[in-house]
Length: 366
Image (tube, rainbow, N blue to C red):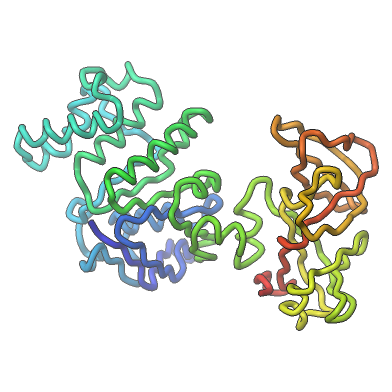
């Protein structure tokens, strides 16, 4: 088993910097997820670790070994791609055993590893089938099995669930988490889906334009985002943002959004006091906006008058698309709400969970 370290890693494609001064230490047995929008450098970061791309600058370590100039086959890693890349003429058994045969692993050892991996993944009855006889989920398990039999120090996974339908994706997500617990190996996983990242990762690395924005536990990313980008990327629906000004005094401070005004809790006012009189970005998550009739009694509630533009019934909750002036924002409210399209309503904002960001730098104000 092994930890993985990126030290001041850069990757340039001509004038484009795909990975920009990446510094991360991934602990042994950790499940780290690279997440971000398309083109942010997450797959390139993984390919640099795998040796499939050459580093422009910096160092990568697997365990205590510098691997900059080590061939991919000698890095003790196994990679699972978005494409299953199975050999169509080979059986499931032979697909899983192929890499071991190339390494001249003894037949008895190959048989042991393949059988163990197949049992672990629940595909032991499929070993004689060809890939065309398998469903998408079964093919994905075979691709995983092919990686598992290698018994690598590090598993690298590049969006392995993106070809699966929604229900199977949720199921396989849970299976991968259980697999990580059983194997006790370092997993590094790439996805653009923040829901996958939140549910699977012990830590999440958020990238944007090749630059590391924040690396932290899922809960800390959600509750204490470092900047507007992370705050907006983590969470579904995304956090609502309003251009606002901090007004009033240190003892009675308000967030003035032009069409609404909400009071800052006293303990938060002390922290953001240096920004009094300045322009800020006010952030509030949809789940922190409540129908007053069903708002939790313990929150510091601030009323905001608005207009209901659209409603979406999700079963266990309702998404309200609301307007304050011309600004639209989203609330996740109790399904018993009486809010209807075209009506004016008052919602309660939970100011205990408010977020404020510097307007110029977009960094969190703490």
